[in-house]
Length: 197
Image 1 (cartoon, rainbow, N blue to C red):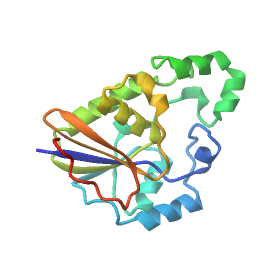
Image 2: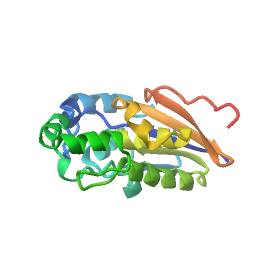
Image 3: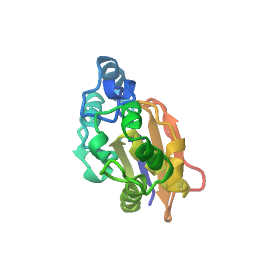
Image 4: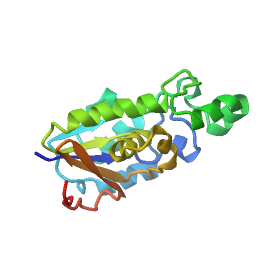
C-alpha cells in the first residue's frame, strides 16, 4: 500500500504580502485568480482536507475542491502575535522573538511552539501512512515546513530554513513506515512515481 499526500500552500493574501502573522484575512484577487486558473490541474484524490484558516478554505474553494477541515493541520498558533508583523513584534518583544526563532520549544507569544507543531503534524503523517491512495491537503506554509522537517528527520530548528511559496505543491509518498519528499512544484506539474518508496 502506498500513501500519497499533496500539500498545497494557500494563495496570496494581504497578511502574506506584509509579512504579517495570519489575521484571518481572505486571499486577494490575484491569488484567487491564480488558484482558479490551477483548478482541475491537481491529481485526483481519495480525500481532500484543509487547514481551518480562511485563506486555506478560500484557496481550496477557488481550486474547486470540496474539502473537509482538518484541525490537526491547523497553522501555528502564534497567540497574542496574531495579526502583527514580525517587525512590530520584534520592536515590542525583541527577546521573545529571538528566543522563538532560536528555540523550537519556545512559545513566548502564549500559543504553540514550533516543536509542538512539528509533533502534531508528525502524528497526522503517521496516521496518513495507513491511507491508501492520494490525499490533497490545502494547508498553511508552516504545516508544509513541519511536514518537510518530519519526513527528512530534521530537527525542529530546520523549520526556519524552509521557504514555501504561495500556491505551490509539496508532495510526500510513503509505504513501509517511511516517506519520500517532493518539494514546491506548481499545481499543474504531475507527481512522478517515486523510486524505491
